[in-house]
Image (tube, rainbow, N blue to C red; front, side, top):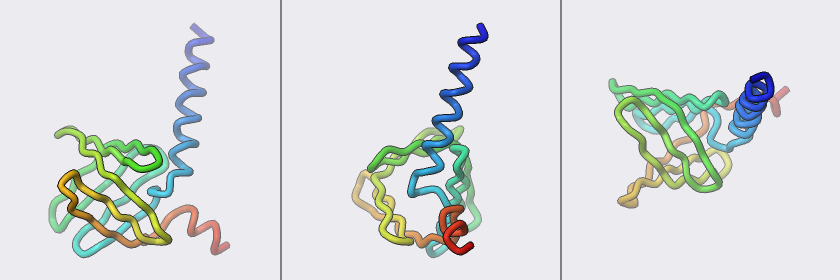
Length: 108
């Protein structure tokens, strides 16, 4: 039991540490969109008066965002302070970095 609990805690810690290094972590804005991608695996996304939140995961080229209504996966790329999310139909959502822990650390 103790060994299982320790394994679960270490897995959770390692997953959180991995998310902290993802380039998508931070606050992004573009037009009427605002997206906050947090190190703890949570996100908040608003478009105009509509908003949703949930959990996210990412690998080198895909980010998946799950809410209580379902899950959507985007191809993504980060170039400097620009995040581009590509939908399955090729539509691209482009946002600029508003803030991130990484950016704040550099300025200190």
